[in-house]
Image (cartoon, rainbow, N blue to C red; front, side, top):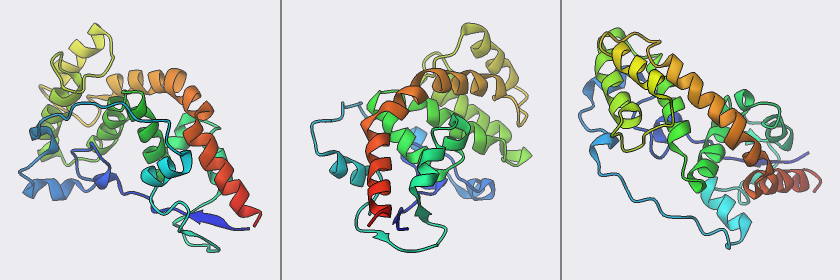
Length: 209
């Protein structure tokens, strides 16, 4: 069987992510994407050829199709596993990228960006917790946040209190709310979307060649 070679993006290179995958690297970092002006959201053109769109989401979707057993190969079976649960989807780096692109098309990319920021935050060294907590709070949780997530007032207020004395778990409550929102709302639509179905179909067709 052949599978498509996918260039899986690293967490610290995902568009819209302001954090580093390695907490130690953040010590020498003075610039943050949060300091940049928020770009105006523009609707995607879904009239384009879907394969061309997928190539823009995952580089080398077609050019990388070859027989290989390297860890960078994404198989149809692996993509099918994404449909088992949101947890399996988010555990896969390419899955994060494809799902993130889908959320961007629905103007709700802040959800996965916040969820990933929380995952990164939990790995942060104690002396950097306060700085990173402030950035995440201002970017996603504050009532005037540029990418404000959809959480209830009680959770927003609770999170605001917790970051005053930050711990690795101070965003857990808000992260759980957003995960549940994605699981019940965006994730089912993603599985029915052309983005997911065409990617799976292309991989399945390639495996038969």
